Length: 274
Image 1 (cartoon, rainbow, N blue to C red):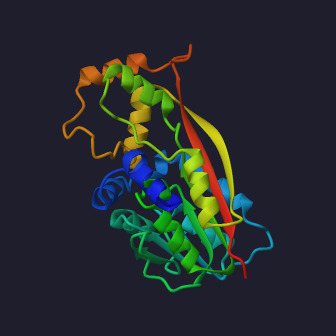
Image 2: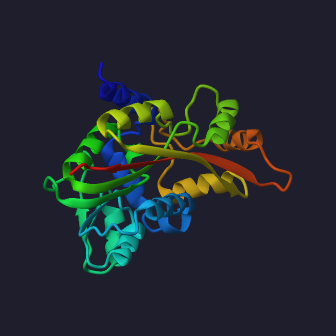
Image 3: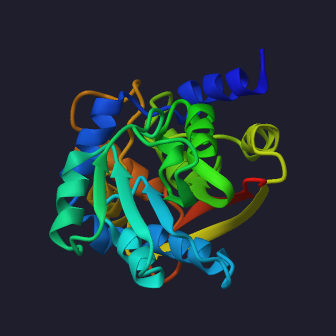
């Protein structure tokens, strides 16, 4: 097997999170609550924005997996002379984005694995916390490689294995054998794919932690983001209150009653050679 095939298999068994239609519906239904809950998404996107060289002046920008357009608008403000396109699989997200954005931004309802965009058509591709939901990250990267102009810049953020480990362990104690937490690609596998497919790319990683008042507050934030467990092995019925109470009791809690959730973050940067 090639490295690409290996990672695709891993994505389907560990990071793959259900059908595209299910993912689009889940995020689309969260379009009105997403911005108020997206602490992690804003922090990771801001990190990518800060890494773009000050002297870089793109004339065409693609925000891939733009969601509600939070960073599409930031990119439009930062590069007022550029043509900006925000693309997302969830039409509900795009409807929300369009409502709060200037008419100068173009919105595209499209699959990141098969984008209706011309070769060598974007100076900058910015993609914040989208690719981890794809079962074919290799295909997404190939599309970015195709669309990016020579001399252009690609910036992608993702979540890696170990994300929400505290929640996973608590559910393991409360409901053994039944997955409740989305699984993400291992750092080594992501590094293998990106270094082979995008030679010269760099991967920066960090573990970010966010405080919550309770496991219930964490669960509520994930719902507001549309990022609840999407695995095919998920239960088709509502989790029983007793199981949720058992999970909450098993979750490690600080003396002040707060809990911490860990997110293993990765930022990929690549410039296409001229």
